Length: 412
Ligand code: AMP
Ligand code: MG
Image (cartoon, helix red, strand yellow):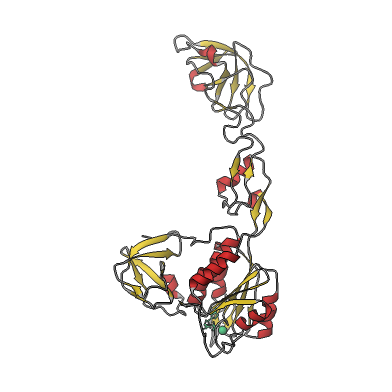
């Protein structure tokens, strides 16, 4: 392998090529059982089939009286029909026995309707006196009686594999008696944050030292994409330490921040090639061109440039879709995409993919002037990014562009 340090890349891969490679290699991880109370937000690994009916009994939809509907025909305020009250049915405490002709059972919403009864008259049109109820309105058979399985039928597929479970989905799983749910395992992600100049997050910048921001951004992105970030420490630019950390094989994804380029202290690419495979190093894009992608066994390794904007962009282009795929989610961009006219032209170069931060002002996407890869605040000012594909030399003012918004609340 050619040592690229202090020489630069002889050739670069295209973004599409790297993306296609990752798309073909990253598949959903194996299922794991997840306790019901933790399953919301997780991705279902298999179809779920109901093994019970919900409700499992005929259920009253009203507070009132369970009756034989035909016995109420002809009832009116002037000519009420009296029925003898045979007892009470409460939710969880049904009336014991069947309803005999000429009788009614006082019943509450959610309580079982006794055998023999086929309708519930609502309390508002009834009057109780001396152990009898006077019905002043007829009720048709089946009225206000929920049938067995009206919500879920035994044998129904209630949720399909690959669904990201919403709160009400978890509720439905509870209602059919599931205690654990088979979900796609969340990818475990190890951060390998390198740089002699870095102070740990929470420190005050001092002298020639800067505070690590990449790990903070990456951890939040990993959480967004359904991954589980493992504990980590900042490593110095010492090859042995970086190699050790790369080989620590408990992760599905390793994100290396810094030391991925062609500088003298950029050891990660060579080390990755030694302990696994460096499938790509150097990508025709701006920023993030020193990005590397490789594998160690089944683990995906992303060498993300240290510059904060490059680190973010390289994650979004390559690591994010891979993490989502491993977790059984769609690879596509997880936030809104806005379609807006470009407020100022963007210059690019044929053969290179550009990631341009834009702010939305007056309904137009304005490329941010401060575009250096080290300027993290540009991503904070930005609403999202426009991607200029490699076959374009740029984009003219006024053209409608797609903005990959950084969140769901982005204004249009
Ligand atoms: P490198 O990719 O290691 O050559 O780093 C490129 C630039 O990014 C340098 O200015 C680094 O100081 C900066 N940098 C590296 N790692 C981080 C980090 N974790 N947080 C913020 N800036 C970083
Ligand atoms: Mg460095």
